[in-house]
Length: 232
Image 1 (cartoon, one colour):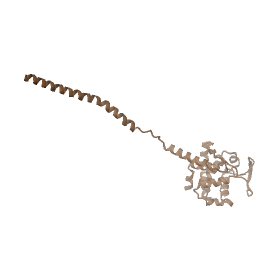
Image 2: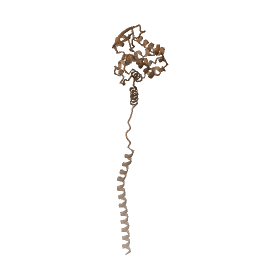
Image 3: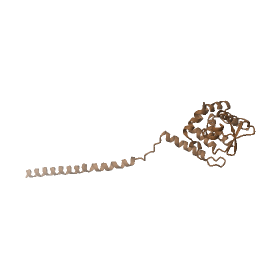
Image 4: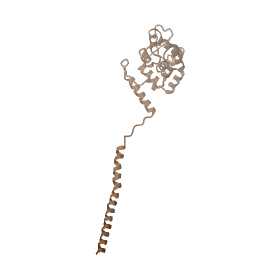
């Protein structure tokens, strides 16, 4: 009888151990599924919207665009500002003009106190980078009109009397004298690095009627960093 009880106890112990192993196996078998499901949520939470990447060129373009828009909103003589006409010119002609007259503009600036950037940009815009008929045939790079005290040659364009010069350099010198003599001598009170102020002043003296002259001059100066000429 004791032997039977001993066998029965051993059998119960064996069944108990077997039952615990099945429970443990079931727990471990279900655990990976729960872990994978649990990992999915943090992955979704950590995912952030992709940030836009801007290069330095993109930043510069955006800044330049904002600056251009700012000037387009400034009303001058009731005209709505448009894109600068110099941007429609042949870029090789623009580069050639700047290289040709940069030294002349610097020399005039040193002698008369006018910003070199203003002289050079005004000449390029008004002469259309030297491509306008008035600049090619009459060497008038600033479209200066005739005046009572003008004793030089003249030429009529679009119903207006314009000054005629023997060479381009004479046109640059006359422009310097035009801005710094008579009633216009007060312009010298402007700071030599204030190209914005000078551009607006030239806009007011724009008797030829060049559209948005101030905006065009400023746009050209800032596109080619001509303001650096005023710091030399």
